[in-house]
Image (cartoon, rainbow, N blue to C red; front, side, top):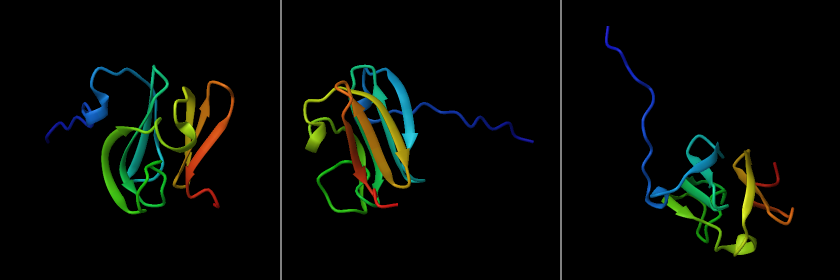
Length: 104
């Protein structure tokens, strides 16, 4: 019987030199992470726009910081939550930002 280790280190483009406080799955193929500087990183498949990127749904992405896009532009994020192909972020002023399939 072979011993399998299910843990591995995830190294993605925007992760270099970052420390993370939270990682969430928006679906089985899209993910987000919050770093200690208040930046949100997303990667995976943008099935319903949940990646917070300015592109068509269904586009796959490597990791990138999304704080320069839309209502998150220039904001420091303090928490993230994912649910049903959507990503919710709370900024340091208490405002809520959402992207993806928010009608579910």
